Image 1 (cartoon, one colour):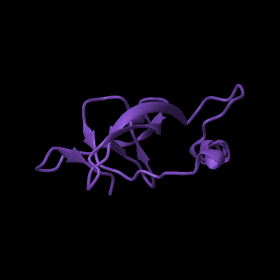
Image 2 (cartoon, rainbow, N blue to C red):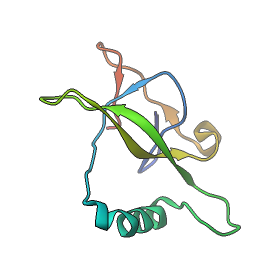
Image 3 (cartoon, one colour):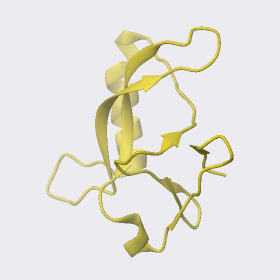
Length: 98
């Protein structure tokens, strides 16, 4: 997890990342992902992506404590090359974007 000037960046790695999970009705999924792709700079044409949307298994914390597959947006290039700084894990070894 990386901290940018006004938004975070996440890349593949071994950090335990704490964040939000949003659920949408299946019939709304296509439209929601289309809008999020536009916001996150994930393009389907020849432009380079700012973020790549990937499917990953995540672990839900709280009452359900279960694993599900979710769409995540990973920064498409090295965040440190764009001025981002690495978020350090807290005392429980979690990283969270401020």
